Length: 176
Image (cartoon, rainbow, N blue to C red):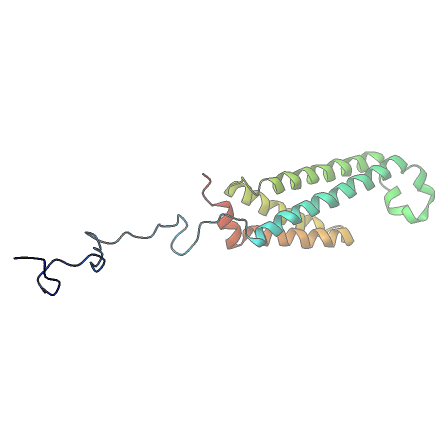
């Protein structure tokens, strides 16, 4: 049998017209995400998680303002006793004011450390961020001032944004 005739139906297929072989066995399955089917592996921080990080920095800034105000009050509490505008503040002793400075400074450091853990932190960092947001909201209820309302809203938003599905996917992502 000769394959020289182009019109021969039993001849070898012509070059370029040969259909591709699908291969043997089953086709290769797409890669599986460790989070389940349909959940993509995150490479960039979702918007809500990034917002929670920014809100932590805002709380750190507000705490810095609080540290400065409490330090000013601690140094000048003796001179403020005669001024009726500072009756509430002059009722505190210097030791209580220094305690408030220490508390505000500790909260500032905690917020700043958590804000830096968003890139490298795992599920433990997420749980700590949730605890921080909830504690911030609960503590902000008692001194119901303007700063208390701001801390209440920021604490709730941090807890919601770190606790949603995007936060879970971000903090549980694989780190290579």
